[in-house]
Length: 186
Image 1 (spheres, rainbow, N blue to C red):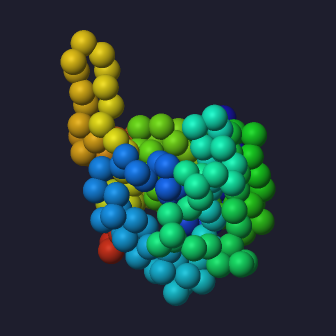
Image 2 (cartoon, rainbow, N blue to C red):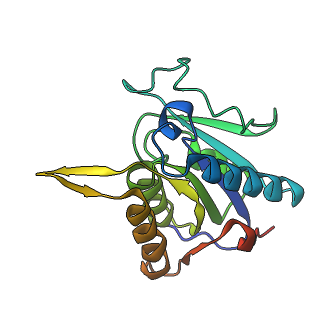
């Protein structure tokens, strides 16, 4: 069983809002603006913001596609965590950064919904954190399943938004909320 974190201190975690990821994302500009809004709200409430950036064959470090989108710029005192796997928790410094802030509640935004957001959301719960997924601040592209079957990005996003309200872990809370509804706990 995971160590459940007691208290109510939020940290905003922004995952993979990178040029190469957002290029194919559904309604990318609207999603980027909602992420920007969430970042501004967190900063205004003195809630820490942690940025996560994926590195791999498809996103080589320091390449143009690897860069965060120009609309989102971390402040010098905000943490940047590099990752190589879908879950931002796997073999990264995310959990140490969260612990340094005394985090108990992760507010999650970014991309791609069906890969890194889903894996990080479940990773957060597995590691004992409460979770709020910002339902209008994550995106992905359409997913081809083969044989002409395509799952639309908006459906992938909707499914995870609903799922985060129903998933159940002992002594942890999981939910989704619009960017304007998110309550950052201090």
